[in-house]
Length: 183
Picture 1 (cartoon, one colour):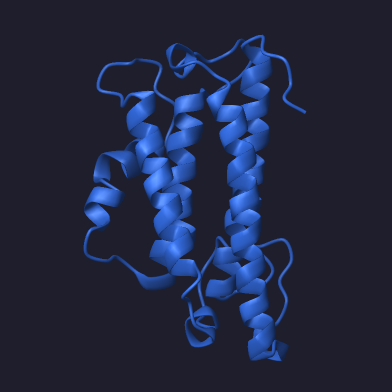
Picture 2 (cartoon, rainbow, N blue to C red):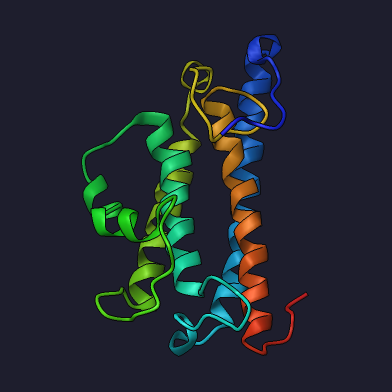
């Protein structure tokens, strides 16, 4: 995957790097609150329903948001850490990571409560750790996915963009389930 638009990060002053870090954190917090409004408006019994004409359900979207946030805001920033296996168990990554497909069977699938526990735990850990990221760490190169800058800061900046894309998909799922728009 080649990024659509990339800037050379060498011209960024240290203060700008930290400001962009803080902006990315504020944006992911805003995007998550919006996603949660959409998610919480769908009953648990409908989480695995794929509306006609669509290719996904809410459970996959929620699991995928958890996996992506872990990847962009934790793993891409500091690698694996002690305790990550509880935060991001292998089954979560396999069922909801990049390239996975929404299951059409409920057999062996996590409940809405279990998915929300992982989504929330990863979000809280991500926010806590991201606010401590240093200029030196944020300037280290990284591969795609990132946005704007090909450094760890770019991976952090990708998190709210990715969240917004999936919030749109969740909104479409809601409409497909016959629910009125929130906004």
